[in-house]
Length: 284
Image (tube, rainbow, N blue to C red; front, side, top):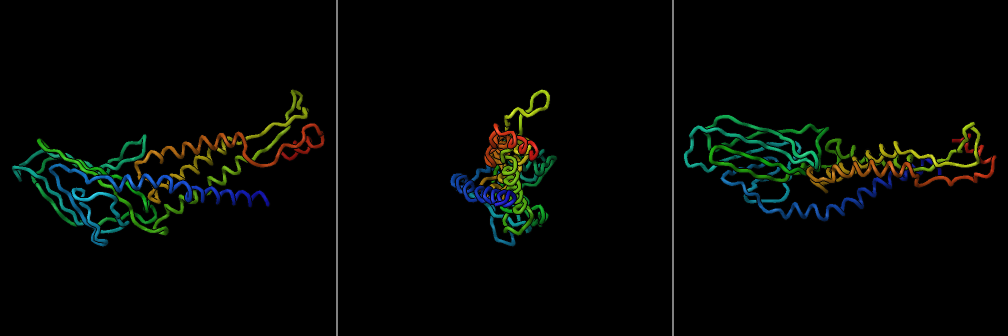
């Protein structure tokens, strides 16, 4: 079997192991933890919405679990607060944030502040996520906060972007990165040998293993990043899971060590035979 064929087989094996072995292990605990989360307590605020195209009703006050949101659709929403003196002018603040993996914290999607008088609001709002960049299958926790003098409330819900494998480029890109990283690791971890020379440049008859730690680190990081995206886009972990940060770092460190040490390939030739040493010197 030729070396290119081995590299392709190892790349496919790495990608398949990531999907077939890693995903079910993590999913066994992650999906249950999300599904068992109790309904959110919003305090004196009440917010609900529905996706007109799918009929999905989003009401954190009475439901829990994961809400399926299409890439493109129309939201009908309603919001109200329990206030003893309606229509009174007051200072209001609020924000909507999306939780990110450690150590990134969260990203603010929208904020508002100013003077308001309304105690309820409803309407219809169309939305669309660009097709090419839609992270289909990704699950995220969205947290909303609202405050005014004498009143504050917050709530959170978990949403998943619905769609198939062909909806967007994110899933094919994740698998491609995983396979490319696996192929790079296979190449970086192949053992190579070179003769040891003395201070005059003459072969000493000894051989030294030649590693590729930089290539291994780069390939390991690409493999880890691709695997993390596979975990996210196949709804194994949510966007806030620390695994999305840990897996690429582990890939980088593990790839560097494996590339330095060498895991497979030719055994060293007999260093006592000058002809063999010369041959190794020429080929390497």
